[in-house]
Image (tube, rainbow, N blue to C red; front, side):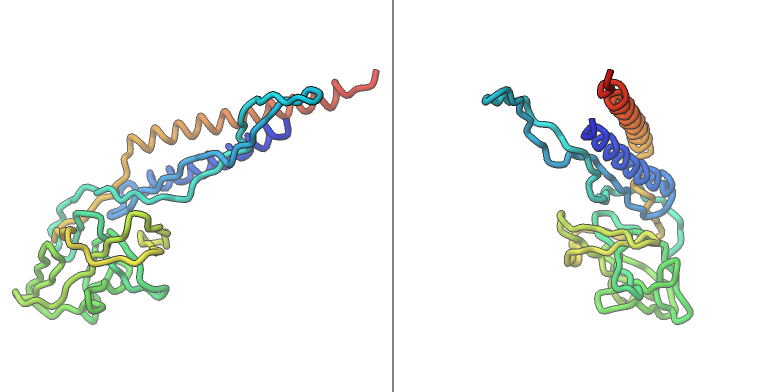
Length: 246
């Protein structure tokens, strides 16, 4: 009975974590460049149970000790591109990321809502420099055009090329706020990603899927809560009734 209470409690915590992740996805469904998060639930290691009668043991089978949420995973699925007409709105088709210089180091984002600061540096919406192949990009006065490979032309003359960084499939992405990520693996300049000027990428959140998963997590939470209540009632009965001395 104590084991069932631990199992129910771990299920409650796992489903709560899952619901928080889904809620974050739904809250950011209209945030440009947002990457959907996903948390799944798995067993801890199993314990093999046997029935002992005298000197014989009869295998009963494995039993899970509890459940746990997996580490947060980031979806790299392509979001839809929406035209804005702004020359410094940029969207990536593919799995690459823009590189941004922040006080904490280089961070990566799919949010391409850029502008020029007072020094005519290309910066993010909150003012951090966007990196090119040789460092922060400073643009002279003139007509700005960005080609598909990230090359920036001003009055038809190249002035730099955006870093479009791709990472290996097993790279771990850690959200650092403001729609940016720290990555634990070295990336490389993409040879396949394409940049669309005058567009922004929408969040890659599947609203239908997330609503279904939220209902599923809510039902699982309610079942775990009921299991905890039943285990508590059963334990109370065992202590107060079965163990009573008549």
